[in-house]
Length: 435
Image 1 (cartoon, rainbow, N blue to C red):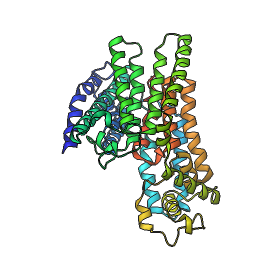
Image 2: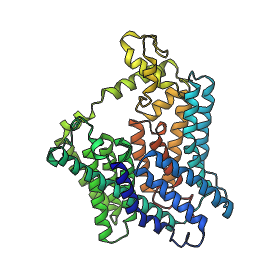
Image 3: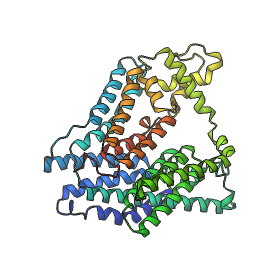
Image 4: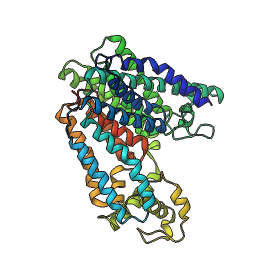
């Protein structure tokens, strides 16, 4: 019930920003444009709550886009990303021919369809820059609400546990009163995953830096406080990837500086101070970096890739094979087969036990071709940002690439939706897909 109260409170505080979306000159006189902007704002804002909410808003965005196309009949602009994303999905569809787990593979293909749809929607939708900024402000406001509620939950938890706030194990991988730290900090939502919640916050932080670049000191001061709270949240939930995200988020502040010379001086200072700080906390960071589970999964996946580098397991079949190999490694010499002594039902239920690397997971699932399509998917988006000199978009993609090196985001709902949001043009600066 507490989760429900927190969520209702978050949406009520967020409501004024949502209303501002429909009051831009671009949308004020046409209801179908208002609906599209509202759904797009809701879709981004849902990243600060839970994946189910994102799924509902994705359906609304798709419906609103269809209405927009019927009313406006916009020009169609085919993008390379839409083509590559379609090839990526179609190749996985072909792997159903040799996968031993057709039902599970079919489920994954259906779950991944929103990613393809989100990559195709920018071929038709062309909101104005002012509307886009209004939508992004809504996203940033929701993230601000989320980070404030997270800090509040931390303080409330400290009071309930009769501990001082500074006693929280900030740089140690340790539980608090028998629960993980992120269970306490994110207790106001049903989705407690530290990595993807922190990804949403840091993405909003990058967008906030962009939106306040040419504003007065009040907006910039508010942005700085937001970045501080996001970084504090990363420390409280003991998220290693989140700390990397936060560092890149703070790096965006260099874009506020008026000249390249000032940026160079600031960057040099940051490197010196940052190196000194990392050296000072090197032992806690080394302790946080140890993760035997990820190492085992990666090693098992590599062993399987060596056996079937061309075809892989087929979509949906990697999970039980890798887990069974990890569990039965001392008594199981036959890589690529299900161990006869493995508890297969237990293996199949551990759906989160995939290799913690997107490209490695693609290679093991679909072979070399799937790996190539996955690389092209990221490279195509990166090339579009570099071509437009979109510094903020490059930072956001770099954050997602770091995530993909340490997690398989395209196999997880929240990561997949966020990649789709990047494809739709959540990058702050003007996109060639938005006129």
